Image (cartoon, rainbow, N blue to C red; front, side, top):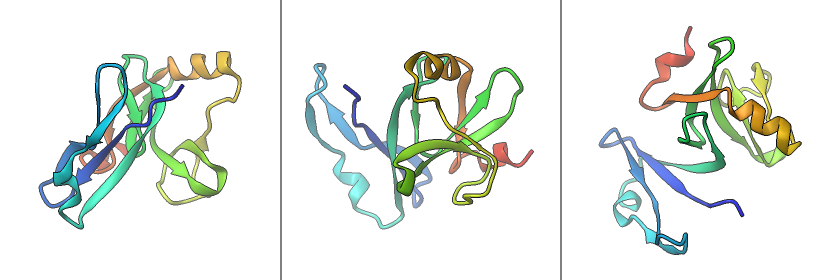
Length: 128
């Protein structure tokens, strides 16, 4: 079963904040209250996948494709109900890649991804 985890970008303090806390067995304990205080917080959901180094991939992360060095931002697309890797957040016509629905193919795709930053702290990574 996929874990539902969240983090938030606190634009006021310009820092990433873990939002959801669980016990060692994965049971929900609660949310970080401080993240709800300001209006400048952006909630980001865990995609359910990890990069080649075992790092959780979240909505808003920037990943690099190992084979060619291309960088993509991770974005959740509501009408498709899935995460995509896109060159431009919010632009449905931008170059993007989707993970395969086939478990084995998706595993191979993920093995080539590495989290290198996120769109809030490192937006320059998408510019080149």
